[in-house]
Image (cartoon, rainbow, N blue to C red; front, side, top):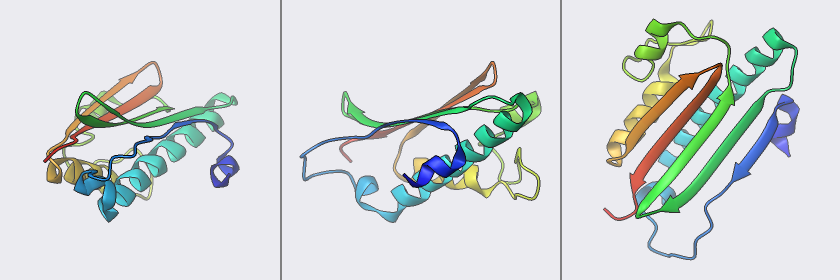
Length: 139
């Protein structure tokens, strides 16, 4: 698996459905941009955490459908985040936790969520970052 080179423990749970009427999100390049940015952010955060703690990090990515919603959940270890960064993480494009980055990854995630009338929620607690996105299955 290509992800194994990042030396994190992986848990993947993917949506399995035979419904040919999937929403536009699941058929579009927006899903690629969304998952690419989610995974990029979680991998970098996990790698930083591993270096700081000299321990194996974990990343969990789940995509599933429940109660008329497509749900994407990503959970990963992360280094301690300053409160002001956490409070504005998905609010402004110039906010980033990484040196040499411009913060557009979280902006892309937020923009895709808004475009498909979804909901974005995240929790940072005890060096664990959890991102949960919900999209209506029917538009």
